[in-house]
Amino acid sequence: MQNQTANTLKSKALSALETGKPHQALKKAQLGLKKFPKDSDFHAIAGFVLTEMKQYRKSIPHFVEAARMKPQDPQFVENLANALMQTGQIPKALDYAEQKLEIFPNNKELNRVLDEIYLKGNNWRQIIDHTTKKLAADPDNVDLLSTRARAYGRVGFDEDSSNDINHAYRIAPESHKVALLKAVNLHQGGDKAGTKAILERILNENPDHINSLLQLSTMVGGAEAGSLLKNVESAIERSEHKLSELEFAKAHLTHKIDGLDAAMPQFEKANAVQHDSNPYNFESEEEKLGTVTRQFSEGNQILANDVSEGPLPIFVVGQPRSGTTLMEMMLSSDPNIAGCGELMLGSDLSVNFWQGKDTFDTASAAQFAQEFRKLMPPIPEGSIAFVDKMPHNFQRVGYLLSAFPNARVINMQRDPRDVGLSKWIRRFPAGGMRYASNQKAIAHTANLYRRYMAHWEKVFEDRILTVPYEKLVADPETYSKKVAAFCGIEWSDAMMHPEENKKQVRTASIDQVRNKISTKSVGGWRSVRHHLQPMLDGIDPALWPEYEFD
Image (cartoon, rainbow, N blue to C red):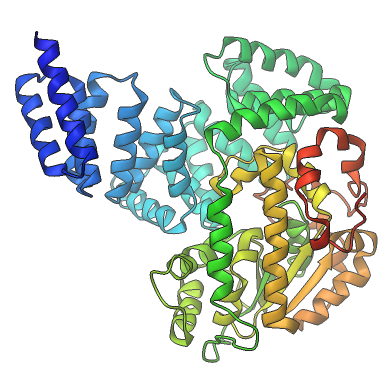
C-alpha cells in the first residue's frame, strides 16, 4: 500500500511537470519527501523540477541527497554535475564529474558537462583563481597544484603549468596522478626517455593504470610493443567497462606489431566506444556555419579602429592534423616570434556573437582585440609577432581579422583523406573533436572547413594565405619564405628546421614535429582505403578541386 501511494505521488508530480505545471510538480515532490523521506526518487524529482525552473542552486541539495542514497545510479550523478556547472561552481563541477566518470566512464551526460567545462577558457581561468586562493594558505597541496597546472595548460600558460607540475612532483613523486602529469609534461618538452621511465614505474606499481598504458602505447617501438600489448589486453579483460583509452592503446600497439591495415578494425572498435559516449551533432554545426558567415558579407567588412599595438597576430588555421603545429613550430623557430599554441580566446570571445546574444560591430571588434591581448599568455619582451595555432579558428576568422586589422591568417590545407585517417587513428577525447571518432562526421567537418574558408577568402581576400601541406613538406624553403613575406617578417633558415625548436608541444603532433620535415605521410590513406569508405563517400570532391578523386 505504501509503495502504491508513493508511486501515485511520483506519477502525479511527473504528469504535472510534463503538462507545464512545474509548481504543482514541486509541491507533489515535496509532499513525497515528507511522507517517504527514504525514497531517493522524490529528491531526484524535486531537483529536476527546480532545474526546469532554472533554480539550479536550490536543486543541488536534492541531487546531493539522491546521489548519496543511490551512489550507483548515474542519473543522480549527472543531475548534480550539471547543477554545479549551471550555478558557476566550475571547480567543484570539474572535480565531481571527473571523479564520477571513473565509475561511469561512458556516461553521455557527464561527458557533456565536462565538454562544456573543457571548451571554455573562462572556466579554466576561474579554476586558476579558485586554486590560487586556496594555495595561498596551503602552498604544498598536491591536488590543488595538479588542478591549477592543468588549468594553466588549457589557457596557454605553459611555463606556469610546468612550474606547478614540477612543484607537485617534488612533493609527491609517488602519486600516480602527479607522476602522469610529470611524464606528459616531459613528453611535451621532447624528453621521451624521461617520460618512458616514469610511465614504466607507474605500470610496475599498477599494471592497469589506464592513461599510462595509453600514453606508453604511442611511444614504444615495435620490439617493446608485444609485451605491452599483453598488459593492455589483460587490463581490458579486468575492466568492468569498455574504455576507449584501452581500446586505442591496443590499436596503437597492433599497428606497431602487425601494420596499419591489421590495426584498422581495432581503431574502428576504439572509435565506436568513444563516439557512443560523445556523439557529434551534424545539424548544430550546419546552423553555426550559417549564423557565422551571415555576419560577414563580401565587400562589407567590420574592422576595429586601428588596434596595431603589440606584436603582430598570426593565426594558423586548418583542420586538426593538417600541419598547423608544423607551421607554428616553423615560425616560432625564429626567437623573435612567440608560439602560443592553441589558445581558446577566439572561441571564448566570439561565442556570444555567433549565438546571437550580442551584435558584432566596430566597437565590439575593438573590445575583442583588447580582451584577447589582456588574457593571452605572456610572450617574451621584444617579440615582433605571436602565433595562435588553434585549428578550429577557421570558424572564427571573421571575428579575428575584424578585431586585428593588421593580423594575418595562414590556412593549412591538406588532402582531407590523409587528415581523416590521421584523426581516425588517434584518440581525441576533447568535446571540440567529437567528430574524429565517426567517419561520416570526419567527412562532414572536412566539407564544413572548406565552406568556411571559401567564404572567408571572398570577404578578406589578401589577408589569408593558403599553404598546401603537401607542397610545404616537399619544398619547405620556398613555402616558408612565402609565409614570411606574407606576414611581413624576415625569413630565417631556422624555419626549415622545426625539429630543433625546443618549445613545448601539447597537440597530437607531439612526436612528428620532433622529426625532420618529411613527405612520408602524404597519400597514406590509399593503403587502407577499404577501411575508410564511410569517410570517402562523405567527402564532397567539388569542394576539393586540388585533389584527384576516383
